[in-house]
Length: 252
Image 1 (tube, rainbow, N blue to C red):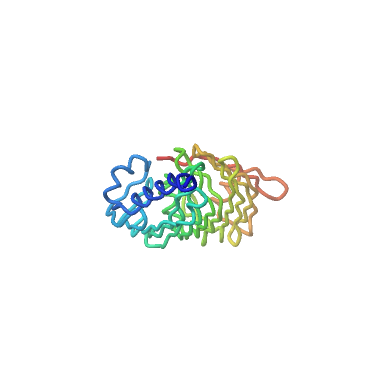
Image 2 (cartoon, rainbow, N blue to C red; image 1 turned 90 degrees about the vertical axis):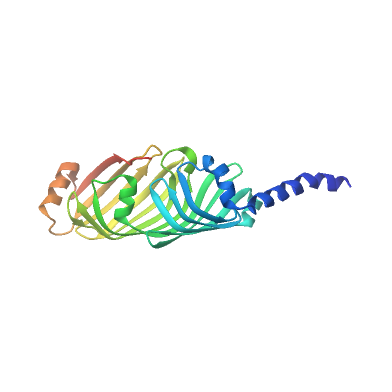
């Protein structure tokens, strides 16, 4: 009998959780919205266990045709986690989204293809013009609810890596692989197959400031504007240009 009484609180908690997760999501949304900073939903149907939204906007990034389903096994690790499928400008997006008992909100296993120009627009970098697509695979996205730039671990491949403004330049294919260190994103950037080859270290801080430190090599003849850009912003040494570039991403 004592064993039964010890299990009773856990049973009650599980029952309450079941009731909440099986309730209509649209009716619960007004209570959840104050806790979803920077997230807006429209056209919600289904339940918290398995539901849909016609549109979900995260900051300035719009997702459509959103579907979610609870991943019950994650409860065993102390996390409430969902499998999410959506469309980002017509391209399929998949991800796992959750909140840990001690770790806070997180996103993992993100996979999506997005136009490079769209990403710069959402980031507020309107002075740069680009073409090509980004193939994104993110293992971890942390510090989501910290009010700054999230920390990211994963890979991004940009192909064809075309810059249109402030100067025109073909970089061939660019590849960025990042890791998370103390809440900061750090990574290796490489570009090859175009007019220039680039290898560098990238750092992105929670306040939006980022820095690129790398080495640039010319491959044959490059446009005069590119040469002037390198001479202005990079130091020529031992046959290559040493580049140090920093700026800030506009945060919402």
